[in-house]
Length: 66
Length: 275
Image: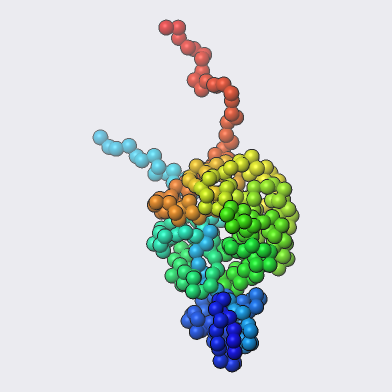
């Protein structure tokens, strides 16, 4: 399955959920937000949200800002 | 011979009482500090913590970025330890669509429906795009966000944002990070008159006198980042900003004297001897 994660193409196995992706990319889940094709994936549904071929994912975390 | 008692001994509690009796309320929350601090540009976590503490701020802006470019958990640990409320921003967004999506993501990440709405129309000046800003504000208010809108110093746009339901209107003094101070004080005062929601001077503050001027013009609070984070000594500048905001607020409440063309003697001429 071909997706993009934070703008970079990635080849993932089938049956990967948003929770799996976050665990692989971030480790802890604290204060992380995920968008799939521009829309928020609520934290409560990460475990059920299966990625699909062509998905564009953004995995975001806090940083300094004015 | 004993040294005279330091005059500041009971001034500090007096000031604390003044602060407690003059709270700043926005979005239904009450703060004793009228200084909002941005974390952008902070040189180190140590400087961040020292600055937050010295500033006395209770509301601190943060941003969301791709996890590879984020600050990680350490910055959040500092802010949690300081006990401040978080105000996520939509910095870098250029359209209402991007800003609304960013705000939704920030709500998810930071577990707050407060947002500093920022929609930039020009990459060189970072000036707000008025059309996209108002569009985003209307959408976010409809979705239940507490919107603090970063805007130009245009009183008409400020009124439109307030009418749209923004919790605060935050006009720039001058472009973000420029340190040019308040370029159009008259507009800031007009904007303060034009809306009933809090007005927070946001962007352009270079040094303490700029922050004091914002408060003297009637602003309810000041939001600044670079002036502290990029100062040679951020902690000391944070203290200076705290004192300037307090001083400016007190001066506003005290009521300044009118400006006069000619001198007005403060020492009476009555009883002046002939010598």
